[in-house]
Length: 182
Image (cartoon, rainbow, N blue to C red; front, side, top):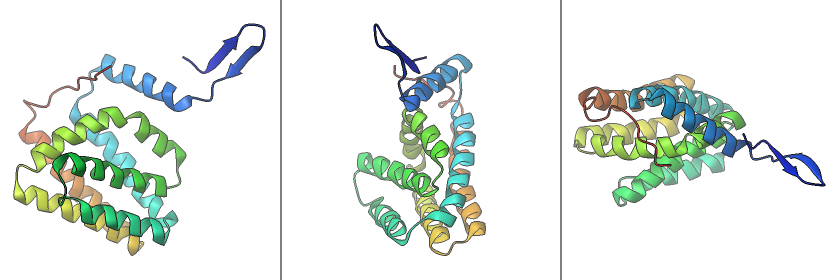
């Protein structure tokens, strides 16, 4: 599994590259179990809700300002840049949670989640109403951090993933299974 490295004449050593091992293990699990977008969305919702709730207790004013800047750039950039900014927004919330395991799992899932975000953003952004709702959900997530409001955090995450769930239902015939590019 790559956790231990053997060097002839020198001994065995822990590699310390646990994130890479987690990525490989989870990728194999997804391939073998044929995970679909709905399952990824459910996992991501749980991880991101917990990250947001923990971030409410741990985030600094400077980190909130950074998130607000990222959010204000969203939708004023090219779609390629918006995908990057969207990921950056969610990832910075995870970092602010101060939970290494949440951050590591989201990192391990990043290739899978990257494709998920690209595909789903394309579907969401096909409607101006959905686009506005997504922007509102991101703004409410940041407001929940500013106001240290866990109820608003629940509402914001539910709004965010409600949009995703709706698009998944409408496009279930197109978005059945993930194809990992390995």
